[in-house]
Image (cartoon, rainbow, N blue to C red):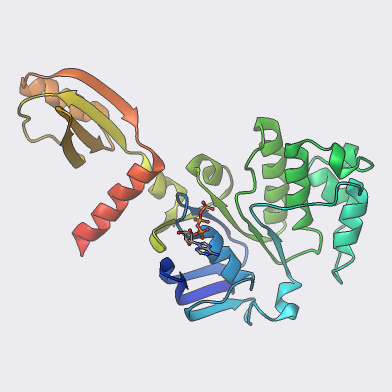
Length: 293
Ligand SMILES: Nc1ncnc2c1ncn2[C@@H]1O[C@H](COP(=O)(O)OP(=O)(O)OP(=O)(O)O)[C@@H](O)[C@H]1O
């Protein structure tokens, strides 16, 4: 399948900060790829490289078979950065027309507005939109030039459930028509709702690149905390530590762990089970990676 966007051994530094560390990634035509990672992982930097806003310190970046700096390639992509500013005095329809006018191949205005649930707002001034409506418009604009590929940096930030669904519907419709999308998120749930493929980044590196169910297994880690002097060997413990007189165990199967703990007869108290944060899950993935080295 045709590769639409590619990084090969890409490193990007900002002074002393290593934002991306030898990242090689292919996005193929028709894929909807979710880029998942905590704050500072390097997601926006990767999007900025793909869209030609930044250059790599080393390595190569390709967009649509050419250079991301080439305006001809950029004409065929759409982008919504994390933050956008739209002119408050313009009406929704005017902004859509203004942005569309930059592209030789325009989306149908009514269809675009419909897809993102903006039809009833076409005559509303931007200044009169809610934060969520502005965000939906900003994302819709990425699709104004009938792009082959769209890059969305945290598209649903600040949206309520309804706004999020409207946005997901618009993104899905583009994908169903054969469009290619790379979107970033902090939440696996969001990526799960849209993407088949998840690329997990952390500390500037690709930690995992797999299907949603495979990544869910990796990050579906729970933290089991209890007080105990000594513990027997327990099944499925991915990581453990003692802190403040408590034992913390990371596991993907807390039910089995607790059953085995009770069965062992070892005395314990104060049992707590809670989901891990994405950061903790990433640490587990990183730890596993290092264990394989
Ligand atoms: N212009 C810049 N100057 C200096 N450091 C930068 C710059 N842009 C990004 N960085 C640093 O590079 C690293 C990666 O940042 P990046 O914005 O790509 O991460 P991110 O995964 O998009 O984070 P977030 O989820 O918070 O948006 C961070 O340590 C960040 O502070």
